[in-house]
Length: 435
Ligand SMILES: Cc1cc2nc3c(=O)[nH]c(=O)nc-3n(C[C@H](O)[C@H](O)[C@H](O)COP(=O)(O)OP(=O)(O)OC[C@H]3O[C@@H](n4cnc5c(N)ncnc54)[C@H](O)[C@@H]3O)c2cc1C
Image (cartoon, rainbow, N blue to C red):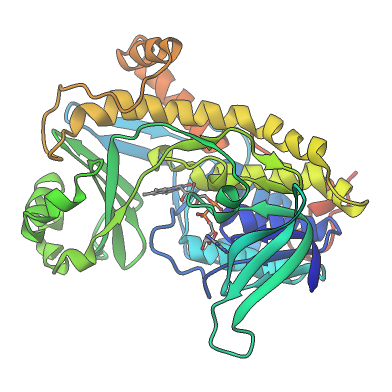
């Protein structure tokens, strides 16, 4: 049976960063990714200052700069009353912006960097189906090779540690019997493309008006559009025909009317099921979950990728040593949750506030306008309700609030830095000499 020290399930942002860092830390690591490539439409595109700084430290900034990307120096939201601009120009550090980069390009970059490390293996088309156990201990994974070639079929991979980085529908989490706490979410998202013209504005556009909300992400020759609907109203709204969506979207973003016929049928519109949850215990003997597998994130703030990356950096820093010297026991694994739990709670708390005070009042049960009706997406603890009212009733000056939000989103509550043994200089790719 094949053997590795660390089996990482899932080659998303969490899995690829963890694989790269552990390999640089001298730990044999195998990443199993169920798809053949990273070309998935639903992935977010926002790489924040905390992750850009990490890429600098890993010596990958020059390669990153060669990817097709755009830098956002401010975010503008256009709600029904006034407009809110969050400027990033006063962020500390080297990056006063958010980079918009297609996530598949970023993941390919990380895969290429990791494949330069002799201890790294990426197996594509490898769908993990269950965990291997000995007594109560997880000792690896069973996976299905989805190719048609000679390797097709069931395989087993033994590992000292298995890390589930397999996202919000984590197989590892379910197989390990980990319990999640779910928070109600008032929205789902329709996801579709519209052609982009050279004369269009660039970057990210957020639009909110009574009963309608959308965000548009500039991906060069097309706009990736997210249109917010009431949770669970997809089937009901589709019955009205795609013309209804064209009319509503054209009303919300009038300059797109000349290209809305690109939405020919509902086949062009994907439903993204928005979830917000958190696993109570992130680890058990021989197994750990991080990223969305430990805490599914709402799209609010576009922070999910960056939080998943920060989890991976903390995991590599805390566990590379123990893994090199004979395995990471339960006590070491719990250190990851202890480190990453509170920034997760802070970010999810912020997302719940936005759900409760900004989104829920604007979508009603038929997905359309009913601006002032209150919904209860989930019961917020009293301190959070008071905080929400305090902030959103503008007890804080808007500029100060905008600056606080910018810092929290761009830098994250607890940014994680690359351990010294994982750092490289950009030009040579060789380990960085630290003074
Ligand atoms: C509508 C929407 C929009 C969003 N927009 C943004 C945004 O703009 N910016 C942002 O930062 N965040 C955004 N997010 C959140 C973000 O997508 C996630 O938080 C982030 O991708 C989590 O990274 P991850 O590596 O933990 O998991 P994922 O990105 O979900 O990666 C999991 C990987 O595991 C693989 N996998 C799954 N199951 C298996 C299996 N059984 N075997 C092997 N491989 C498996 C998958 O193919 C995938 O590659 C958005 C979320 C939603 C719902």
